[in-house]
Amino acid sequence: MAEAIEIYDDRLRATVSSDASLQKLANGAVHSEGPVYFHEDDSVVWSDAHGNRLLRWSPTDNVSVLREPSDYQSGNYRDLEGRLVACSSGLRAIIRREDNGEWKVLVDRYQGKRLNSPNDLVVKSDGTIWFTDPPYGITEPNQGYGGEQEQPGSYVYHFDPATGEIAPVVTDMIRPNGLAFSPDESLLYVSDTAAFNIPGGPHHVRVYEVVDRKWAKNGRVFAVIEPGQPDGFRVDESGNVFISSEDSVQVYAPDGTRLGKILVPEVCANLTFGGKKRDRLFITAGKSLYAINLNTRGVQR
Ligand code: MG
Image 1 (cartoon, rainbow, N blue to C red):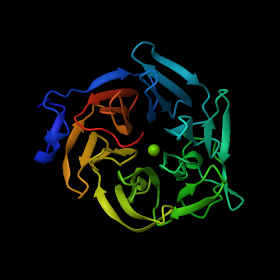
Image 2 (image 1 turned 60 degrees about the horizontal axis):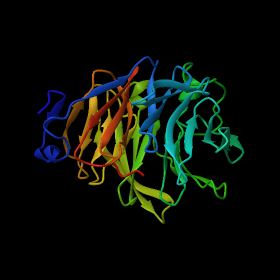
Image 3 (image 1 turned 90 degrees about the vertical axis):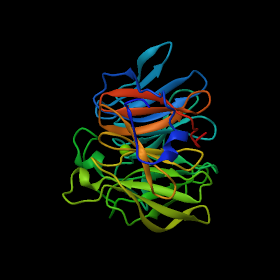
């Protein structure tokens, strides 16, 4: 087994092959976040979230700047039509890249008040966008343009771009950050990174039951993540949860057992599955973009 892998449970051996090795694909960002894969050209787009840029890597073109300034864009995803949708921490909005290349604000308010600063998002199979709304773009000078917090808390929202309907679905977390659905979308995982700047705050992932395809209830702690905090994460087709942490991507079985770690030499912020077979894990960590080939596939399209 490659030295980059720590195994705590034999179930990990089916997921991470014995010769898997971590590759560094790019560096030079201030803070890498929010990777999203494009199968059309085998490229990865990700946010230099604190550098206020959007970057792209491909095996043929290496690294280029797609957008600067990016209004402190953070999490990225693709909608059912393949368009790039993103959290704009600076604009305090969910934005979408239109076919003509222009960026459109899809939603920036709830009940007439500005959102805090959307951080990460996921597109459900019905096309709805679920996103977290911590206040980092307000409180952290390198993550947004400041301003006043208008919402009474930091929630997870369900947003339907077809109708404009927006509703909070998780309201009992302190700093919701990353999120992902289980393979059948019956469960919603959400990380809380409050420990980042609130002493004694949580640094865990909670799991909720999805009700009527648009609500979440019965939240409970799924995994307490150390060292550091769980920022972004993804789920594979077996339901294993790949969670970013300070020293690694930590792999949890659906039953909450920690199976092992993929060690990464920089602080991990987020990750996504890509490659032609969706079996390549792309990891944004510190100033860099990494990749490792796995024996499992991501569930996101
Ligand atoms: Mg995040």
